[in-house]
Amino acid sequence: MRDAAVERVSVVFSLFDANDSGKLDGEDFELMARRVVVAADGSGEPALREMVEAFRAYWATLVAELDVDGDGEVTFEEFRTCVLSPERFDATVARFADALAELGDPDGDGLIERSRFLALMKAIGFEEGKVHALFDAFGPSEDDLVAVDTWRRGIVDFYAPDKADIPGDLLVGGGVG
Image (cartoon, rainbow, N blue to C red; front, top):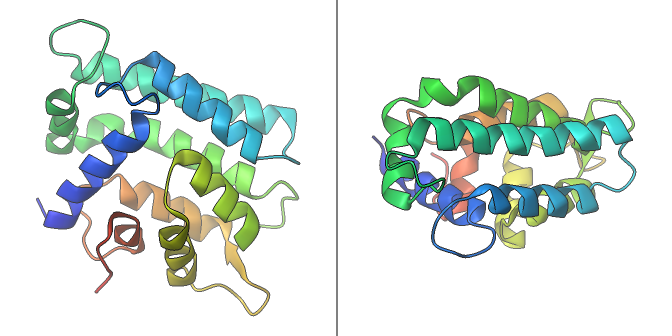
């Protein structure tokens, strides 16, 4: 596995640990869902509900696949095994990416504005400077817009341990290419 992928696993775990308990549990995903929903003002109720359900599905998949000791929590040691069989999470990551991308495009024009992108990514827990760098890496238009499909693919790639030199590496302190 590439160094950037290992670093992404660590960053994702720390983001998912929204209550800073050192372990992942259902509360973390409820808390993160609430933060993202608050940041997604202007989105319709169905999109907001789907985002919450995507977070819940993500937790359900993680605990079902990774909670080796059956205590209802996922430790970092348990979590990092997800990179050994990432295909177990493909559908869950795709649903999450779809839901987040939909929140990014409440007007349905296929484009996301920097300010909305920034609000959603900060609600997840990413650092503002790194979020701006990622947005720039996605190649915004003259109007400072990025195609929602580009962002959606970037989300999926970020969770794929076999990917290297991807824009999402900018979120973990690494760079692309």
